[in-house]
Length: 413
Ligand SMILES: *Cc1c(COP(=O)(O)O)cnc(C)c1O
Image (cartoon, rainbow, N blue to C red; front, side, top):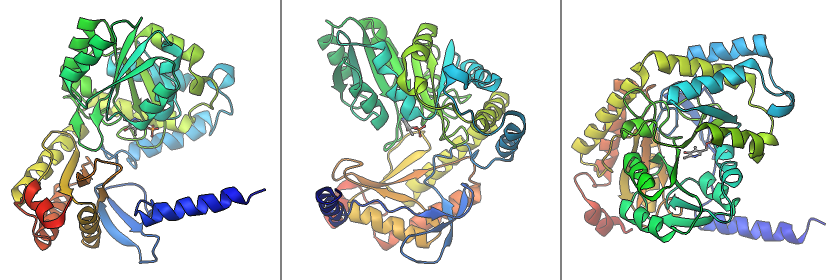
């Protein structure tokens, strides 16, 4: 009898709208790329815009080599497997990709999942139990939080990227049988890279193992794109790396866990999203093989992304914006006020630059921002156009050269 719950859901949905938190989806009418056509649900005509809000870090979402590999996969390996891995869902190419990822990252082995969300969801429970503890960064991704919830180990949360607090939490959990430190490789709202080397030092000192979710790093952070561990000079020290195929590595879907042999072997026996969910499509597998081959041969794409990031970051500082410093292609333009972030994003869209404002509850109250994401798919002309558009709109709102206090004084937090 669909009655009471219908009324309650309607009321709750109305509440979400009233608080300005209702998420509307805009439609892209082209392949995912640096230059796209977008339509809003409000009936405005579609607009050609430069895309600065995708996770398409290496510009591979619509790369000719990736598309060609997808076509090839359909011919050689079909469309779907209609099975989980351990019944009849493993092809030669699934094993080949696992091997290639292991070689690329320098790990013993790799296990594929249909999403990194599942890799994290199925990681903790098979390895740790009630006698153990997971020490987890405050800003870790929702899928790590959920994965930890499904595991009986005690949870201890440390302040974001705070090594003194991590050490304190390691001391407090000394009674546990095993301990795992869990962190994002890069934090998605700030573009901060985790201090993986220091985390590994602490893990050595306190006899813990280390898990890093490198979804926002694999393929481009570090001199050869191996991720946050390479960026921090800690290659080979991280015990478990989870990551996604849905961002830099082609942007379709899929994820994996790579790491120590016994850990991966145990996940194949006990990890529920792996055991009870269908195999990754051969299309995704062959395309990702093409991506890993491409990234193993040359660092051109991550080098281009790095120079794009430097160009954008220094251009925005020169224009007078308050950005969070760093080296990651995630660049937070700090605006502090939620309405200001939304207004500026909307004005930029009218200028042909597609970016999104983020505010509470996605980031802390009073820390609203526009998050820009650079891509190797951007040309320098795209980046310069974006900086010019930002400068024009920043001047309109009189925020150029203004710091946190002045912006908050004028617009509120
Ligand atoms: C995007 C992301 C995920 C989810 O990846 P999917 O493969 O899309 O499920 C998990 N963890 C982190 C840190 C992410 O940024």
